[in-house]
Length: 279
View 1 (tube, rainbow, N blue to C red):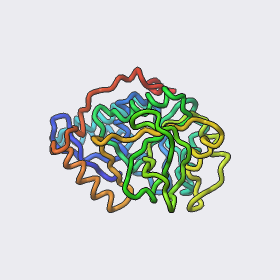
View 2: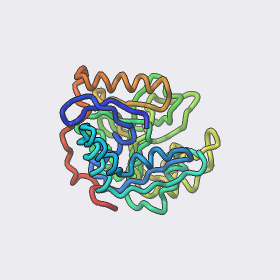
View 3: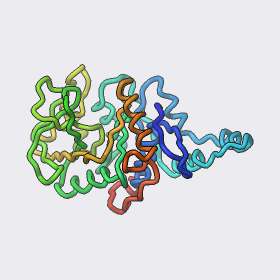
View 4: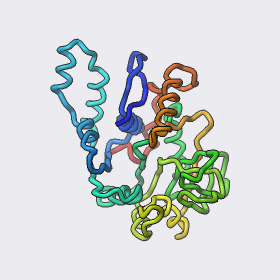
């Protein structure tokens, strides 16, 4: 629910909860079925995705422009949203595994603390193209970072510029073999649920999604890594330090000092996406 800085339809600055920005970006890519994993004390997230006509009317009575909120509510009403409770914080892998009763085929996973600024939401279409081109069971977003020890890290063989076939994936290695850090945006087939069921709790006693990715590799499944481009920005709101940096980057992006607008990206071809219809 931490806010990032975007624009409204008229170009004025607008604070928007990160989870809403992620929802709207995926909505623009054609996603209509959302499974939101929440834990204890996260009721504010469910409330935010609950349409409140009374609040809209109150804003109008007070002469406030409710256009952006009304547009957001329209997207919510035209989506299928399911909230799944994670009773204990048992890891990102456990959160994904909770979706098993609901999900079939290809699906996207995105953590609620990371947002990618990418012209035309190009990173999403790039992920999908590579996922389909190489018949992958998992396709992971990567970014080269100076110190990858706090990330899942992969190494692999180059397939083409910015794309590699993953040979190994390790969660927070003490001695990383590469600088290719996994960003928390993934495309999976439902094979990942079997992999998650076959692994044991790993680092921190949690079910690690990185370990399930390695399990896919070990069992002969194809895992592809797609690197962020130099002109794509990752906003990480996972800690107080990174929150400050994320707000700075989003503000710079709003002010035009970056080459990409934060809102109003050109629409991408939704026919590319296997999730464009509710499934």
